[in-house]
Image (cartoon, rainbow, N blue to C red):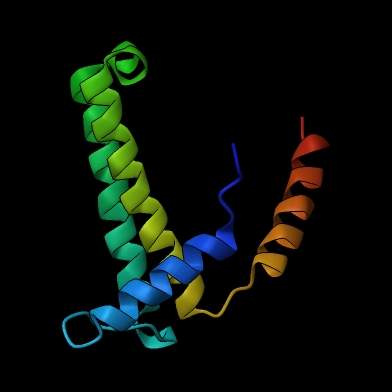
Length: 108
């Protein structure tokens, strides 16, 4: 299976933003916080599924799992909007992720 990269997700978000530029608030640093708030709302929907349906159903029940993954995709869409708003490259994100990983490996 081919990997799905951050750059591919960001490009898809750019395409959506372009298509709906008249209806959506757009991509800029000024709306970044709004995208973060929308993302948090989607995280809440993910939590609700697990809370209401249970951990095992989230893994084993096909319908629940499909709903969970769809909501996680919404989280990723807003996440990528945030990356676009603040012009964060995949290289910057990778570097920060690796540094955070290293810190966490020494933490406990």
